[in-house]
Image (cartoon, rainbow over all chains, first blue to last red):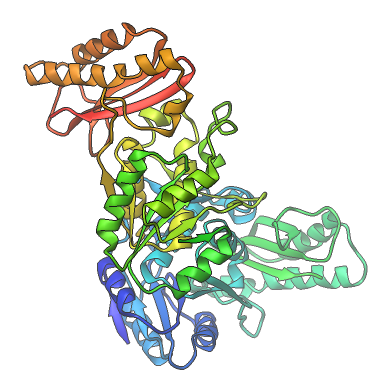
Length: 278
Length: 278
């Protein structure tokens, strides 16, 4: 596995590359969820293609007061994880921004609600860093997890609107046995928090069950989810929304393409999840 | 010369291309100034390389109430101009935007003053369309005229900050014998306007002369330029600024790297120009 730690070296690498390349952009602290992204990336790259992983804890996507400083950075464990998973290229740049940076990629519609409403500037940071990674590593395809569903929708929109010659591949969420979606932030949870955390999935399953039984009032479905989450100790709802999968607009009545997305603080740890309802 | 009129065809063309490619992005209405851009593009592409020209009157960079509708679009004349100039690829897309577009590239510092202050949204439109052209046509280099100096500085910044693997080449302004900078908008001028239009260059030359004689108060230099322009019939100043060539910040005293930039309405036609002072 080749390791590249500067933007100049990344561009030199690209100039020499011939085979198909599939990128998995991450912030590190790799887990089984990422392993599934790597499996799908290899499937698309082919045996002789390049699976590239980027690890960069992107300051631009952390809003003020969030967990940028404490975000886990297990550098050598992550490198071994990639090596063992058959990754061909690990890009872990030491720096990505100039002090006088002034150019950003901004998505103005899909990022208005859900996590975008709770985390101002977050998706501008995501779009900007992903655009930079696309330009630096010039992949043919890039793989993202559906756990960050809004992010995936926004990246798809960015690729379409800015004509990046890159296929975007979404990968279904990987869950623990009790339903908790895998996330690097799960390690922030203490024992009580870990015990409470599956409540996000339980709330979504409850809504799906009610929907399957004919309930189609979004207000009532969200109230049901709220009830499940409020039953858990130390759980505080950031948002619960039922939206259209394509344009992420809130629905009033359940429709094909509806899905539920939520963000819940378990103690101080903010977790997100989503589930297709129909 | 190959002509491509859709974004899909552009991407297919890029996938097959092997030689070096140099792009000259334009809005058409090609003139001798563009010919100089093409000459520099060929110099950089080499004999076997590709010189690509894009012609697209980009609605996103025309602020409300400006000349988008009346902007000249001499399609067949432009195609012949390119053919005669040895252009290898003409990209004139019929459409570049989705109705529900929501992703833009935004420069937040260099675009604050000069034309950016007079034309809100203009440079967002420029950055967005140039980013799209870079992604669609994947040139190794791109050529821009120094007549649009702020645009050139912003594109350089975009390429740096978003890591486009593209060299940006600036080409000195081409002028008529009387000093008027070549521009597609010069054809809007009537006989009186054409006679008055060299006043922009005359005002800049006057400032350069005063600077050479030791005047270094920017206030007094701008007053002198103002005096020259106000002497012309039907000339109305939009702005006159003396700024640093790198960061485009207004200066109080003349410094190395100073240049003067101005925008003047001659009748209803807005002309811009700039000149290095030191």
